[in-house]
Amino acid sequence: MADKNSVSELPARDWAWTEILDHLSAEGNVQIKRMSIPDHRKQTVRRVLRNLEDKGWLYRESPQKETYYPSDAGIHVFSGIVHNADSP
Image 1 (cartoon, rainbow, N blue to C red):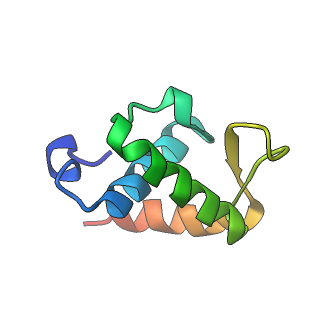
Image 2: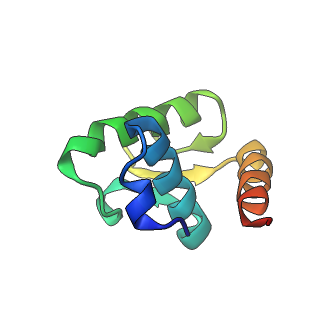
């Protein structure tokens, strides 16, 4: 996982991406209520999640559900991002 001190200094969307990828990597899905998100960043995280859903990389079982899962395409994309981030 990313160093929390350096992550907190990132622009809001970059911070949200990092948190979402870290959560997906650790949990296999994303639930905003299970993430440690400062109040001033929650809307950005929601926007990024909706954007990832619109691109087909994440999905929810229904629009009312709060749990996001990686789609088949998302698994491919996210595993490449996580793999490259772990490379020296």
